[in-house]
Image 1 (cartoon, helix red, strand yellow):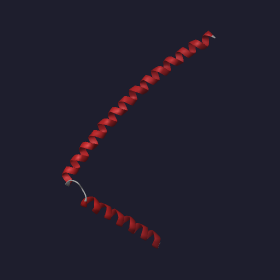
Image 2: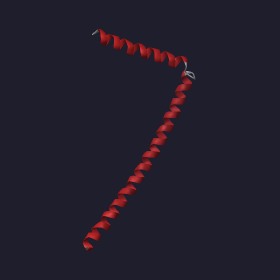
Image 3: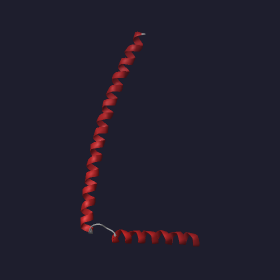
Image 4: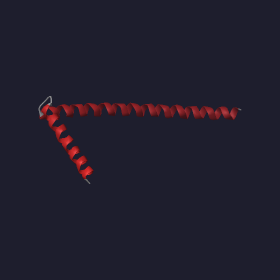
Length: 80
């Protein structure tokens, strides 16, 4: 039981220490940091949307190619 409490206290203490150091060494004020994070989040969101559309387009092309190949393979098998 003592070990669990010690571990819990270390975890809480580490969290408090990390939060304090984060506030101490923060490069900007809170409002500025939030705006930066919002811009970064939008940028990441836009990039991931573009990547997903590109991946979807490529998967459609692959599916079309596979369909075409299976048709050709079927014709080849009938010729044999």
